Image (cartoon, rainbow, N blue to C red; front, side, top):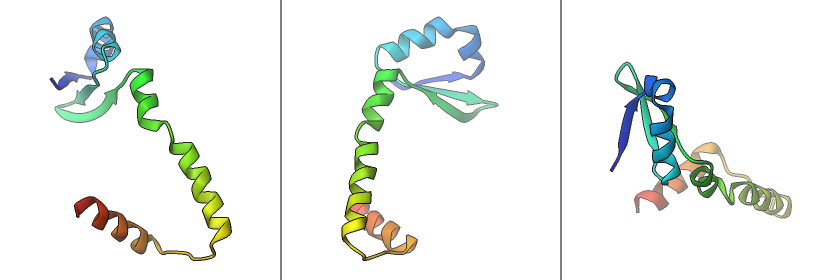
Length: 85
């Protein structure tokens, strides 16, 4: 179940939020009724970011081997096509 809490709970009810994130669930924090941030456990954050640095390294290697360059528009329109089908 999605956990949405006011940002003040981060200070006032830290143990409750810590328990939720340690169970593997993110907690969405709001400020004045609007989304402000997400709190994740270190493990959940690591799962999200694992491989990003190695993907950047691989992209750098590929860029050194291939002189083809794409514009910002070409890259993101291609990504949008792949994501949206």
